[in-house]
Amino acid sequence: MGALLFRSTNGKSPAVNLREALLAGQAPDRGLYFPEQFPKLAPDEIAAFARLPYHEIAFRVLSKFTDGIVPPDVLAQMCHAAYNFPVPLEIIHVRVFLFGRFLREDGKELTILTATSGDTGAAVAHAFHNIPGVRVIVLFPAEEVSESQRKLMTTLKDNVRTVAVDGKFDDCQAMVKRAFADPDLAHIPLSSANSINIGRLLPQSVYYFYAASRVASAGEPVVFSIPSGNFGDMMGAVVAREMGLPVKKIIASVNDNDAFPKFLASGHYQKISPSRNSLSNAMNVGHPSNLARLVAVYGGQMDETGKINRLPDLAAMRRDIFSTSVSDARTVAGIREVWNNFQLLLEPHGSVAWQGFQDWNAVEPLGNSPAVIIETANPAKFPEEVEKVVGWAPDVPANMLASLKLPEDFDRMGADYAKFRDYLIQRHA
Image (cartoon, rainbow, N blue to C red; front, top):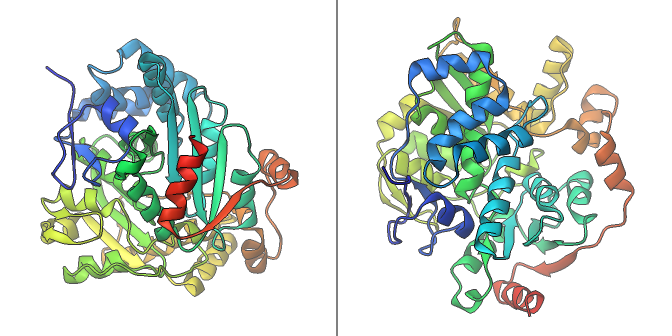
């Protein structure tokens, strides 16, 4: 049996294996790579996860995708090295290990080009900082990230370069996508590291298996409420479900950028341009890239511009997924409610997920089913917003505190692709 193949959501590029998909990032036809078919985990395999640590669950899930590409013993070592601590959130380190291995085997260098709406950029920058053979360029909207989010990216040097763009996240993302398909940049080996890249998406699915193994009995379906911007986390849950994880409902909780809940309700998709600013800034996405993958799961086809050339099975999508838009006022109310009632401190993104769960529960009562509400950022990244609600600023982790004291160094440009193309060429001259 050969290696699992991945096809472009645009359907105009040849199928490739995981190595090729991961290193390319985006397909040549500007689509996103997705498995031709989802490998399955048997119910007894999933039930066994309750007795396993995170790194072992990661190995058993990811090995279904890496068969024929990465030897099992090597993947096991990667997972053990990456997940050697308690894992409360999705972690990206396994992808970094895969990148490093493939680059060493091929004797190549690579430029990681990514756009961030706030949180992914810092994770990518730190994950690839000083990784041999890798350069990193991160684009972010200059006026739409918090000070902590920005400094976690802009205080790194060496092989990491950050660019503040005078525009929206969607402008940054459009520039990145265009660069991948630009023949003038063909001499520069580019790849992505946000959820455009299938190598980011697959490790995200592991968290849902892990979470379900800790809150549910064998075979018991779980509800997941997920703060959703570019829809990478949400697609991780979809991948897990398609692999066999029992899921009762996936709640895609969005902020004021409500293109998806409107599409789910009406069957008509209209991206939001420019995207709307909300307290949950990492979710300020007017056109989520990963919608193309979601549409593909349900038999439809959406191109990179948001045009739907073939409608998905909306009845099935509505059966599986609930989506709701949460205003800033309700986001603030959610932070206050959870702190007052449970002494748990949320930040804006987690609060959106909390309120999304409440909206779904009002329509389809949870009953005795287990539910997991995803929190994607540390409250210390939003000290002003949190302090306004609870009356005190959250403790700042040591690594974040250190970055806040370091000098920043970043470039700045407008949302002008021609200038960005010249910037990339100059940096690779």
